[in-house]
Image (tube, rainbow, N blue to C red; front, top):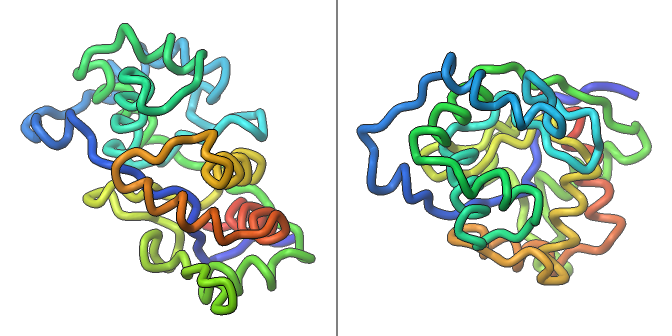
Amino acid sequence: MKKLTLSLCILALGSSTAYATNTDLTGDAANGKTKSVSCAGCHGADGNSTNPLWPNLAGQHSSVIVQQLENFQSAARQDPLMTAQAKPLSTQDMLDIAAYFASQTTTIGEAGEELVASGEKIYRGGNKETGLPACIACHGPQGKGNPAAKYPSVNGQKAGYSKKQLVDYKSAARKPDGNAAIMRDVASKMSDDEMKAVADYMQGLY
């Protein structure tokens, strides 16, 4: 097992109402810590989840977190638990919670050595035979994403969660929202083995 210094593409996300129309609003991390108490059961008090199917939020871009809360609130993204959590939140609540988790440090996991080579190949070069694009263009050389474009940071993300998102995009269980439409096209070109390798590879990025 070893930690990696490369990057990976998992999720591309769409526009956020709060960030698109209220760019003067900012989040308060101290208030967000208080408001995020109900999030700790799934995502951890500091945003590092202990369940492989629940994502780490620590270190994620505020714009990405706000966007996804809005997507759950509007039902653009479907999940009964997250919809219930997001429904009562105001825009300022979302901004504060996002600011808190963005200020935390992601706990980097480990990737299996047997999948490093294939995961790196997919990330850096895609698969020319199937038309699968490389991931580096959206998520950068170290998996840090692009907050302005609302491309998420993917370094250290849970492999189980990442693979599930790819599977859900491919099956249309997760509907594309905004820029995330690109992920439906990406996932549709991936085999199960490619998804597993990419997701495992990403878990060790830092």
